[in-house]
Image 1: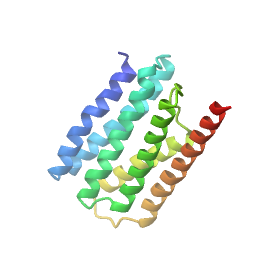
Image 2: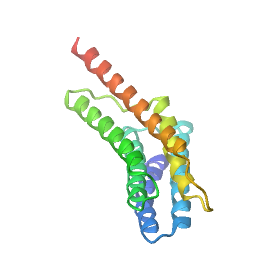
Image 3: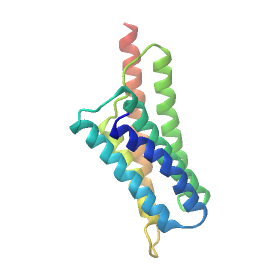
Image 4: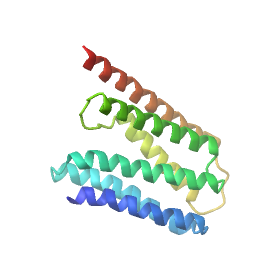
Length: 174
């Protein structure tokens, strides 16, 4: 078990405390925990590259930790009416489609490592920024445009993954 993989496990662990903090209306603690998770996401990728510690486990663990972190934060924030339900739905459907597509490819004997696309990294950053934005202290009115941008990125990156999955499937069929 290397350090980048431990950071991914750390993100999974901290997610539980993030949910607890939101449920107790401790948005200050939730914000701190979420920012810690976001930082650990950036750090584990950076360390995996510079330490040449990319592993097969990490190729699954890192995106899984990201999905658990993002999806659970959107669900709990939507339940508390902090993030609109429609935004949460878009994020959930995207992740469900991506995960289902990868599972289908895996079952069809595609054994490659999942590789994130640049648009997906931008989408994850946007989704993280949305959570930080809504938890940031102070009185503010939430701009619907902010939510639209996050939802649009989620949809576009989801479509790109679907297109890539179809390409991989068709390439293997030849």
